[in-house]
Image (tube, rainbow, N blue to C red; front, side, top):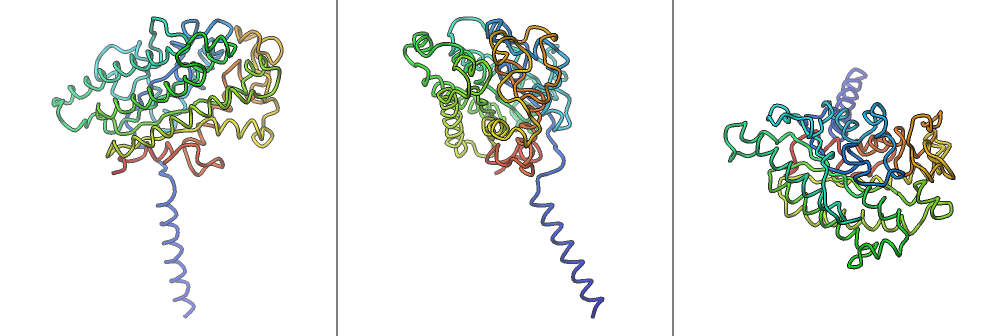
Length: 362
């Protein structure tokens, strides 16, 4: 009798373990390629004076070794077991060079448009992405087949941070004057709609796995707090929250129109606010002052040299005027990757690990 009970208990434990394994996130990613479109959050190639004034540039892009370690494409590629996607400017135009992914984020673009120029950059990157996908399909020998060459590809779109950095660098009246038809709040509406259209265009190009990254709480960035007199600027964060909410809603509307596709929205704003609100829980000591810069909050002059950097960046939430430190970037990436992390629900309706790990949902 005792032996029978032990046998039954062993079977029950085995079944329970199998159910838990089924319910948990996949441990391996079968993603075969990572394609990235975005602004300075994904590439240093287009994030210097062509986008922001010198004292607003993303500091890590001045230090290639640091930038290599902390930019979103490298962090996600490591999670997927893939090499960092090479910048489009370094490729030789062959399918083999692009087969495991491309970073389109370094694309330079001209013309005006002020704070609303993001649409032009997104459009150009989408065109390059479409051309790259056509090249990959042609390499398969049959461009009419069901995009087998890109069935394992994950596309990531990360736009908006540079646009809001430019917007918040202006006084409200100046920003409205620069875009009289739209104003400060119009940026969120226009940008969210443009990114959503970009997702549709990718779907029409046979892309079936897409992750869209929101904008972090730049109202708590050192530059914005310095200009606002100290403390997170609620109006700035409300603008960004409005953009993220509209983008999430637009993607929700699109999902029924794109059968066979998985489209994920990652609310990095939520992740960073968790850190800013509970810094000690995650090992941070400084939530307001940048690690690298000059002046109050280290925010009157941006990070221009290694000598300007603090000795313990891991204790800071912000690296420079608008950019989080490596530790923050890694935390938010981990939370976006897996729902088993302490901070669940940054990405929805599934995690990035789930997005990368299997065939798109039917």
